[in-house]
Length: 355
Image (spheres, rainbow, N blue to C red):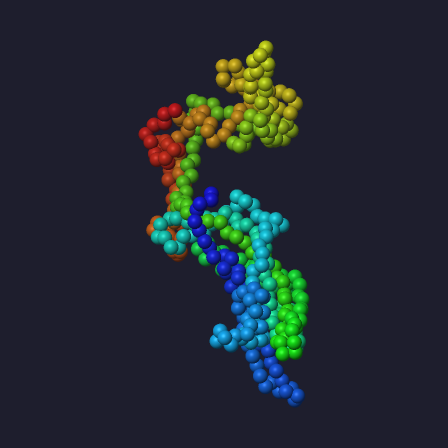
């Protein structure tokens, strides 16, 4: 698991998406007649609040650097935490066509993992009205969340709708020193971005041919109709409850018999009323009771005479179609008077069936 190198740049995209929300905010200054005399776009950059406070207050004459002007804004990611309330099925998968390949490959990816990303937005101004003007351009859109669409995994055609919630807004007046010191008012807005972290992309083959064989059992072998069916995932110590004739239930149990210092385990299939249907004998054979029969995909009784009488095949049209092609499906029905045998291991037709 660990050691497989991959990087989807998901967190980078979340940071860029968050910053994009606030990169086009302007403030206007009006004269006494209400006419706009100045319109300034508020610059935005990534970085912690302390960096911008230092840049504003720094005496920069000896460094030949112009002090940072206000108003301005900055933002930073301050934390990441797992969100169990949004957890998806761990073994669930997403499947997408591999458009970068002309083969029959496809891309698969397990479900993403939910994480919350904490962001802080800093608004630095030198007078109170500039701060409130910026604030009023932000608050109406968060009620309390604003949703953005992020193209998180282009190779899987995954575009996630990511909600960004406003948690709190606070203000601090950073005014220290003598009367000549610059005053800085700082608004701090805390947000939570509910995002996802995606696992590695793996490849797989696409099924391009579906073949269904229809068989008719031979006359010389009597195949009893099943009275019950056991799921393939059953184990000797697993109980499966399956309806039998609409009234009884089948119980799959593991019996242990003790003789002196020796304990022997036996498998028994039993009805709810206590009557046996299948019992493992001491010679590792099974004996049925009540004319019951257990069947599954590996049942071989009568297979030698149950030849293939007809076959239904579906393939894409054209056969050279890829994932991004415009294609349909071609259906073929075949009928065999003499019957055919087929090897289920490789899907090829054979002359005779050998057990």
